[in-house]
Length: 142
Image 1 (tube, rainbow, N blue to C red):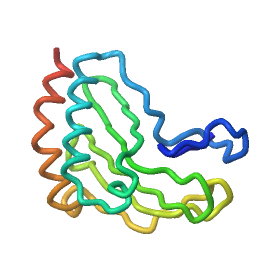
Image 2 (tube, rainbow, N blue to C red):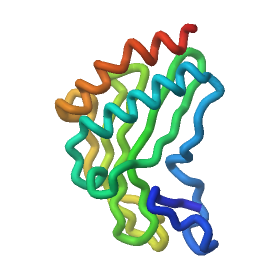
Image 3 (cartoon, helix red, strand yellow):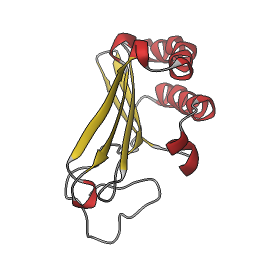
Image 4 (cartoon, rainbow, N blue to C red):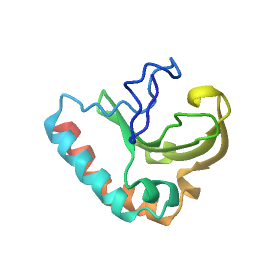
């Protein structure tokens, strides 16, 4: 069932789709520590009104073959809730920001309204990626 950091996971009602951001860590402890530093840095660096209002976000980490993808943002719980997904990819040019809204009940049928590539993501996001990139890549190779 989908959820947001504000929670609504225990009421059994809701969208049966899997969560977008599962908040699960990897088996690589050094990489996890580097991701924690990145997420703290991004939370302090981003000037995103939606995330700042909530004071946090959910995340998902995909790690395989010395490549990573860190997704974080807000997934919708109800109709008309916002959807925000920041993606930090090990291939920096594939990083992006997607913004949208749920058009279906319980956060279903997400319509993406804005897609920004790495080059158009905004200064705060790009600078934070650049500050943390080498450390994350180094943790992959150790």
